[in-house]
Length: 100
Image (cartoon, rainbow, N blue to C red; front, side, top):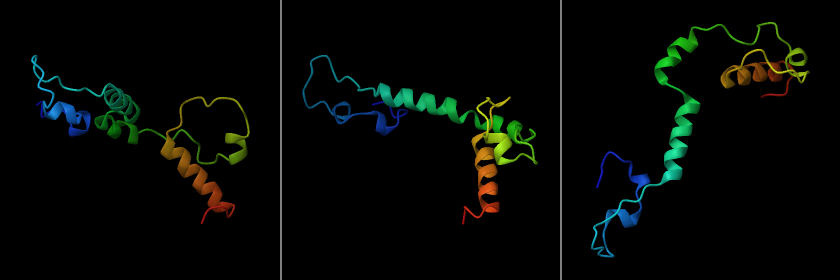
């Protein structure tokens, strides 16, 4: 058994050869899980590059308002990181008494 593969990627049939195959056991590979992990890694990015991202200036201006930021259907000039958008919305909601 390949111990470098997480246990969640192996099926019960790959850990024992109860069927007694003449060709030997074949290891089950969960291709869906592998694809999910690969996609997740692309989404969360490289942890080493987080240091560079933290040095960047915020995408949302400090004086941005809810209406001028979200009151239009025009796309943003650059992608806004999710934590920055959440922080912006929480600040606005707190000011308006909508977030406790």
